[in-house]
Length: 336
Image: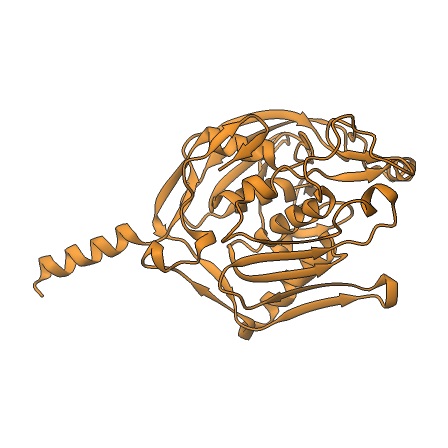
């Protein structure tokens, strides 16, 4: 093969490879923080290849950027919170990143800047659907760089507690991306719904089956949470709220198993803090942000348990990783 033929072949391979994605244009929204109750403006911006997802506090005397990494998650009370120590500003926090991270993961966005004017991402309607809508409205742009995945090669598991208090999370090899989750809430409204769900994103669209699941809480816990400085912005507009017997939201549930689907939504976002999409299966029982973060740290600590992979051709990638079709968007209800 002559040099021109070799160059043409290399160009074809590069054009056909599975590429990284960013946003086509900046886009903004405003809302309140679920836990702080503070008004906040959120702006999503394009970023160069291999940037990852970088969160930026735009309201401080100096602009502070915090890349989303497992090590940067240093508070997991009721959310995943990034913390950086600044030499002049002290501790800088950006909390409740998991719903936005879940949307980035579900739509395959590799690189973006997230500017936020307060210490918390706005909760919006309590799900990832508004973030999906924002990203779709901004548009997505393929970049001239190979998309990098973390493929799970060996099982990694974290377990805590015993008996009824046992909770655990597991990552294991699987040629795709599948999440299975079990919850155990002793509450009449939750008992009526499915408390276990399994979603294989090679078969099930994220936008249809997971993105709209809202966070949830119990009225009897509100006073304790607020005395601890949490849930100050929570309401029926941004969460499923239950009293001792029933769901108080007039519109009911969006999914028959919305409670456990929201735990899957959270897990998708927590896992994407790894910085790359995962090729593997996640299974968990009663896990949360803390355990999910410990799982990522344990994975990174075991170099034999994972590897980086890219795909020279889209058709060689697992189904979940291939470019999505053009979506049909209908307000907060998204379908493909």
